[in-house]
Image (cartoon, rainbow, N blue to C red):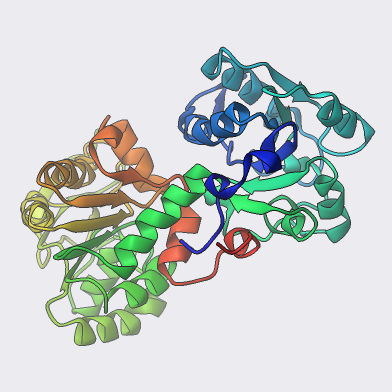
Length: 398
């Protein structure tokens, strides 16, 4: 962690000053209300730290994928209402403007100890283009900048990277600090055995992660549909399973150079179609029927993976083992989630790398029983690949 954080700011830098805080409030909305407030809760420690030290807090975030113009379904107003419920002792205001005279006036009138949430940054056409004029205008809203949006740190947008060029000090929030500390420590000085579990649909999406992690880990467990491409590389029948033909040769190379580090499923749950009422069976990986597809790792693989995980001291998990959204194809993912909990109880550091893995462990109600669940899927992947995160690189060095 070589970035300055809110902990490093002096009282003089905070008292009475406007802290412009970029958070990740990109949360699901259901019937005009927040469906999952995990990301909002994750940012509250940073907001409360700033408020306690006398700052006036102006918060900005994106939500969804509007096309650089206002769309009512992507308004942050319901998020402001939920934030007010989660911080009952704090006055929370909402600004329908993100920049301009109305936003600037609301920011200047804000009292110490209060929070102002600005409207969706992606309603602004220059946000995703990292327009410098927009970044400069955002900077006028605050006296200092705090980036606590790890989930958006891999994006060089006006509110995540550009603004830091015009507003100093520019520091990391507590959530950003926590994310970088856990992921950074796992890569730099893991307690061993160090086990990585990678899943998801496509090997292409995890290729750089596999290449970056293989030299560092003791074992790498592969699940999800991406295992099918490895099976094809081994000459096995994959039936109607999702396979990336253009990645088969690459999978062969990874198998050849990984030795016994790369651990593939030994069996799979197959079905003729992806539906909850489809007839399923567990078969050995070399017995997949030509007219069926693999939708989850099999029970023998779950037992084997769980045994390896329970023996680990550091575990990093990114990607489900099957189509967990459609039971019964969630058994492999749930099995891995419970193995992570057992490893945590045994003293291991267990990190869930955001995205579908975070959704799966939350769905199982186990997110409080592992060491850390990342709020950023794409950012976690790019960090694990060894890429520089623009939203972090723009901040003041420690």
